[in-house]
Length: 105
Image (cartoon, rainbow, N blue to C red; front, side, top):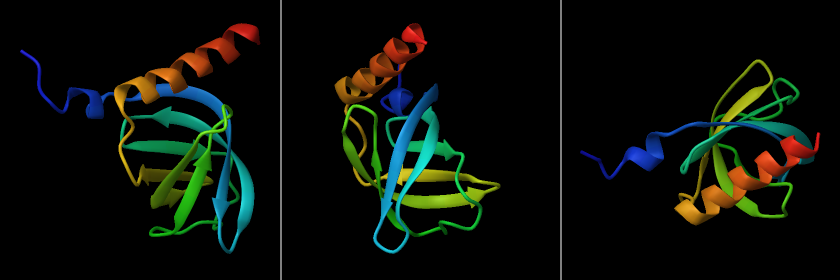
């Protein structure tokens, strides 16, 4: 038996460099370490750079810009929720790009 929320609940491990764009903080680099259809976890951030409620844009290595809201931060990591959930083909494309980069390394 499947549930309609199954895709949203799946978390995928990643290791992809991203850029975070913020109106006040400017552009900063981070590492996308976890991805779901609705959210992401980003590490390697300067502690205190972002706060819960900050509106940012996550730019992926393939150039996709994903508007998001910072949900929480802790120890140089941030949990963000995308403004719009990723469609399954978009999620698959990001996962495939990450796998391709890992295979080249």
